[in-house]
Image (cartoon, rainbow, N blue to C red; front, top):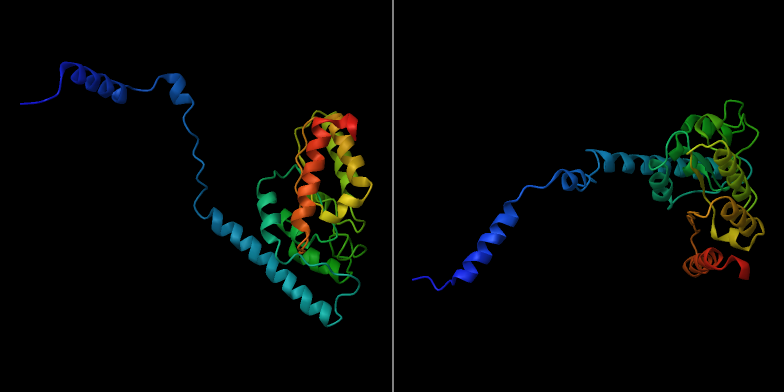
Length: 234
């Protein structure tokens, strides 16, 4: 003999009807998007990171052998940042970098042969041999430096973004910069200029390998938050 009461049976039938009810058109349209990457996506990202690592390791060998002259700032250990950011950008978007830009250029799609030729100062380099390691440039890939001045890329990025906005374009300008940019005047001026044009700013910190990076980055994010919430106090 069942101990289930008529009240319990009614609740069970209601629950069964609710669980078997079909979703309406509005609910179906709001279905959870498929966020799973395409097959081989992760492997493709890994290949790009390894390509940057091998390129930089070769630069070390050539620089040590005095084949590459001038300054060389390696991107070893930060490959995932360049690859991850660039795979989210479109071809029409712009990238502005620092003097540690080998990985950014390669991740952006600038041919490795053109980058290495630039290291050698050859006319076949991406900057026609006139820039070297710190001044890689390729307008066809919308890669605008390679800037040797600390924080020097921020005003350029602000100008590119402003130009696109004035044209009514939806293109994105991505600017890489390090923690050393926080102490330079260009950084607050560029951020303030961007906020004047557009109230939303996305900042990505690419810090060097020092123990102080975390604290420096935290101070910068606190500064940005204050600037967004109370700009009149700064």
